[in-house]
Image (tube, rainbow, N blue to C red):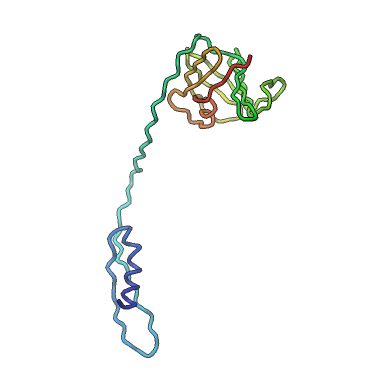
Length: 180
């Protein structure tokens, strides 16, 4: 194959993956004593239509969830709950007045006198816990089913929570153990 043929082949190859290969244009060159630049292929571009509608986005199916067991009492448990990490604890305090405080990675479950990492408000409707506010964080309210077996408090989102950090903090299999 001549050098011209190789250049034509190489210049058309990347375009082949985007649609039909362009038709190369061959220019005849008369031999002379001085080098003449090689001919190159000039692609004949055909305009393509650009979709005007947004592409359809399909969401991944949500894996099936095991529902939480019913709570042993109709009353939401208040008090202090912990989740143990290898060296530290996360502590939730749920107060009877509908306020909560969250202490992140503390070295003791005794958080008296400490400033919480976050605080906010909640309401209870049967076995549904709705976090209505978080101080300093722009997250809309989210609702979770709750279950309490006398020692362990578990949450499971109802619908969707657009704040992934909050969902990761509350969501089962993460469970919160009552501090006596």
